[in-house]
Image 1 (spheres, rainbow, N blue to C red):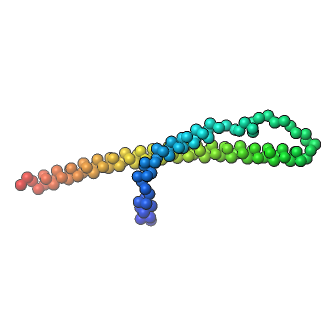
Image 2: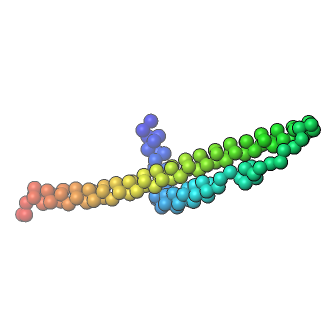
Image 3: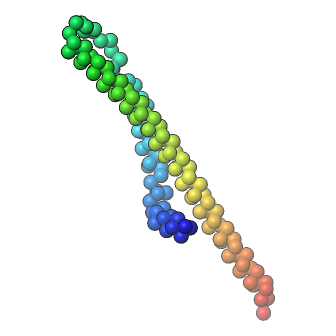
Length: 129
């Protein structure tokens, strides 16, 4: 089981993930701003003239129009929720990449410190002569 995860983690192009994280976060922010700025369409909020109810075909058309507008509003709400989720995930990804980069730097410094400590220990152990 662990070997499968290791294979998956090794197959991820981490350099690309790290380099593209800021671009992805910025794209998600722009999407959120674009979608979040748009309110309901002006056509759906405008006052409509009422049609005479005596024509059944017009009544059916009015019902269908109302259903389509309701569905359109629902889709717009879903789009806004999806773009908010994308923005949140992009921000989390950006934070994760920053933390991974900080950990990589710390591990590099730690490995250097351990190598220096081992070299000093080896020199002291074997003595100068």
